[in-house]
Amino acid sequence: MGHGRCTAVVLLYCAVVSVFLASLVLAGDDGLSTASNMPLFEQVIVQPFTVSVISGRYGVFNATLALRASPIFPEHVHGELIPIGEQRRESAEQLSLEHFNYPRPMEGEMPTPGMVEAHPSLLRIDVQLRFSGSTSGTVTAWALPAVVGALERGLSEVEETDAAPTAQASFLFVSESKSMSPSTLSDVPSMARTATGIVALEGGQSGSFTFRFFSEHEFSLNLQLRTEHNTTDRSWVYGYVPPDNKLLLRPDRSQKAWWQNRGIWVFAITTFIMRAVMAYFETRRAANLRRKRTAAAAVEKKKIK
Image (cartoon, rainbow, N blue to C red; front, top):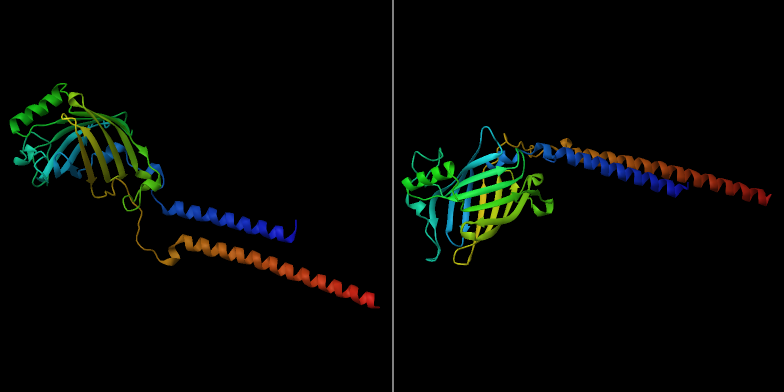
């Protein structure tokens, strides 16, 4: 093997080792890189999400998504969408929700500790996963009346009989690529999930949805629903809950001293090795050149003699 070829092979080897060490460092620094750290789907959706709704038909309002899992069957999650605050309409064509005219009753519905300005529930929601930990299943929703007596009867019909649902959809959440989850929206790229599908509505109408989990504490929902007037109601829902370290422990992102950064040490060691190898081969090359010159000088002396 020639001197130049040998040098190239050694340098290539050093480069490969450098890349390998760097990949190990990056993997070690990302404490959330493995799927084993991710919480179960039913643990994620039962968090008390605060949601903001922007609807072409109903204007803008906020609500709390209050879901809870069955103590015996964790794959069965149920709860209610509870409106809070005020409904804001931008035009007379947008419909008023009667629920915002009444305070939330103290009894007969899911408890809402610490919730201010709460109103009677808008929807009763039932989520049935295929099994515990699954990211696929069916979600069913029933619209609830605002008046207390009618509300109680509506809840009883949903819980005790087969009341016809207002909307129903099947879902399957699949992982997103990192390019689809910008860092401004997701600090846990491996948690990003997306589901799309068809919504079956009462009265034979239908619609479509796109549900995105940016992380375990942030999501968005885009809805396009056909109404009884053969128009399309477009809605956007954004949900957020503060991160819970008990659910998902995030790595410490505080600034470390430079000597505690493993990447710097890998770079320094790799640079030192490559410089040492290059110096060794340069020394050998210089020595060989001197020997050749000495031999050539000796040959010239013999010719002169």
